[in-house]
Image (cartoon, rainbow, N blue to C red; front, top):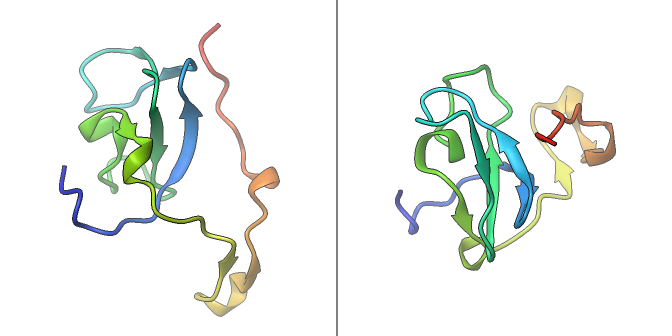
Length: 91
């Protein structure tokens, strides 16, 4: 929506994947177009502006990768992306 705004989101699908969307996205599934990704926030449903609000995001807008958490201190350390619960893609 605002490419000049910095946001931290989880990439949950890449080009060619089909993803089940969440409200408020207007259709139940989306095939991610070439050169795009689908991003979602980690907060409770409805608390984050993400691809369910504005659709697939151009990979050209991605500027970095989160590798560590520094706050809250109880989560301090490397991001364990492999432990994140993954939603199944539509087959």
